[in-house]
Image 1 (cartoon, helix red, strand yellow):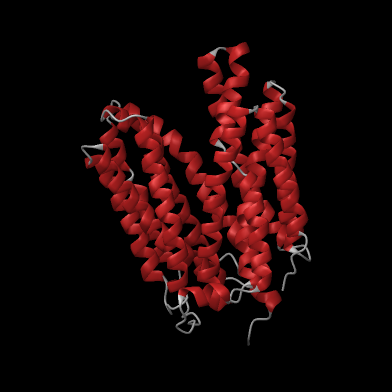
Image 2 (cartoon, one colour):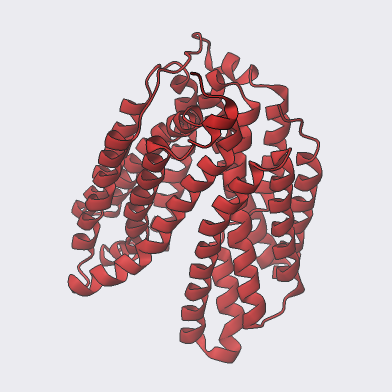
Length: 400
């Protein structure tokens, strides 16, 4: 007896979706530990903020390019799982290798290697996840993956504090501990994830594959790009909160309060990634839920532009930021799976990642320049205008 769509949708929470979710949790746990300890390690090596910016910028930029290229080749693979497992293993090994770096250049080489492997595996992982659930469960599957990933990000700073204590602040030992969850991610994916042979895309050139993406997906990418231009790095929220709270709390307490607010941000991010995905599976059009996420971002930008230096308002701002981040990431992935044919999922996810990467870079630059040259209110008001434009654009999308 063949499963009907209704029957299949009840089995979306299978070994593969759980395996992908647990893998994301473990991998993010690993590299967020490294991210948290990286500034202190560089200082111990005599390298300043400039090196940190160069390392993170180079790693992120190369990773984004790799995702775009890897997405194209992913569509030619009948079995993606070996590539993904290898990607997680290399990411873990390269992250652990930072512990042996004697110079800032050594740190850059290890971090860049880790992020290149991350770029190779990401489109393949998302395409495999989309292929393992029915279309009416895309939202829950991608929402669960985003939720688990963020739980790893919440656990990492707590783990860092514990590891610094037990290692007497030995940064290299802390970095070696990243191998435990990092290699665990590769093992978890290898043991739990089940893959059926994929429909192989005929061998087309990269440019031809890019051109053949559906027109509706191009409209969707335009909305993603417009939203991304306003979606600044949320580390700026930590800076904003610290500045606003310092006059009343003092610099040290304000900095601690900002970190607590960021933990609140991540908790809302984790919860609403799944809530948003679940909701999108139970409405007629997913774009409405994504537009709702964009609207939450607009509300956050409006509160920031109002410039109210109160702790309660800042807590609402961080909660809104986490909420829309979770909804938007889960919905972007699930809408991509829905409007693009399965044979082109790799290319689609690689392209989506590249558009988001350009947006991440440009938005933080734009907001940062406006913040410095004009005022924080002007910077956040500009972000709000871009969010409003993205809402109007995404509602024009026609879903399959």
